[in-house]
Image: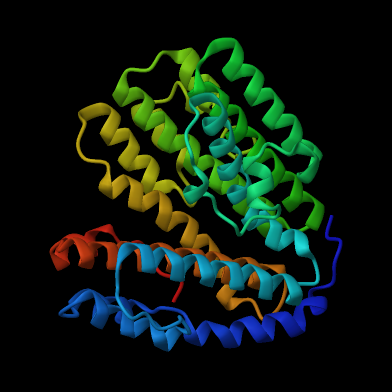
Length: 327
């Protein structure tokens, strides 16, 4: 049931639609790819509001992206009438940090440099395992993951528990907002993850019980049906959904093999295609979600282009790694 009025979002929607003018466009991405040097490539981002860099190194790029992401969530949190919409996008960073905390405790590694400080909770407290500093759901998940790792010694199975809890929290937050758009977006993410999991697990020859443990609940495509699907049956499960093309590619991969690049892109593009509906929405929670999703996609594109330029990767190979943009 819708628990808000679309007009509650009139001001934030107007502000975010205006900010869309500074998003990285396909033409700007092409200009970055074709630039003679990484520093020249980065200059394009000044038009999008990024801070200048003296030297375009991987470390400096990551620092700039982290700063931009922190500012994004801080600013939109102030603007959004319902903070849960913003939190829905931050959850994955909290659980990323929870995985690092688990790895640090079990393997004794210093993982602080890998922490993401743009989640809902203080990253350093999560790394220290301070469960009182996180949500009740996340606290339970961290305890369960620690117990699993201690009992079985299988860090991957413990991480799967955290993955499941992450998307359960996202689903709960989406439901609490009352937005069908957000609920369907989270369900689509889960479907895409499960489809990817199916393809990778089958290609690796994983046992059925491992695949079943990795499948996430909460999608529109029943995980129980998906894990045993192949060929036409698999295509039929995704037919008429945003993952239609990805499902067809998955069926071909499982039947005859091949590279994963086109399939992975189809999964990502399905999510972006769904978010693009927000561009046609005058006001509402969709606009907030659309803008946050657009910026996250932009950060990924920037990292892909600049890391490629720094590594000396050919322009056509960088281009092949890019996904659909919001604009």
